[in-house]
Length: 181
Ligand code: HEC
Image (cartoon, rainbow, N blue to C red; front, side, top):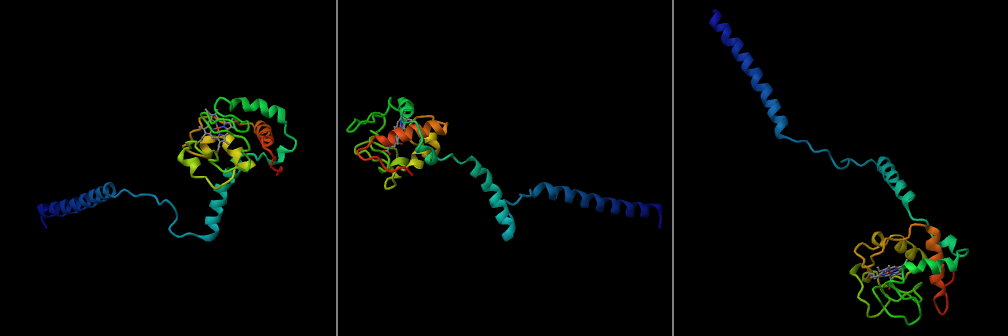
């Protein structure tokens, strides 16, 4: 073979290489791999492990219940805490609805209990479900987390003892206070 012929062979090999390389690069550019949101094959044990791992921090972040604190709660201190509510709520029997509904005898009453009060859809949607101690606890701790979209514009009371005192005082505001949990 002449020199000319060999050059053609080299050129052909080189060209093949370039074509091969650029196809690879192009191919990588055109196809963007998306990582899977979850394993396609769910392995029983493995799935359980991730679920418990995810549930653990949620359980830690769960709100402290007021139930165990109610019997020894400071009712008088609770009445003082309630001053944060009285700009919007009345607590006495037959009291008017203001920005918020009257709260006489609220424990054991229905959600959206006050007739004629224009509740938000989220609270109105909870009708049929009574306010027990822990429901009140959650609502008062963080109204917007408990009922996203609630009309009650109140930041919440973060200290569990204050919530317990307040709820213990609210419990007394009834003809027949509900039994302690
Ligand atoms: C800025 C005004 C405001 C303050 C302060 C406020 N609330 Fe409310 N509250 C409302 C409004 C408005 C609603 C109606 C919520 C809705 O419809 O989403 C409401 C609803 C409630 C309900 C539900 C009543 C029902 O019939 O279902 C409870 C219980 C309640 N508030 C307790 C409290 C307590 C306890 C405090 C004080 C720690 C407090 N609120 C402070 C405005 C307020």
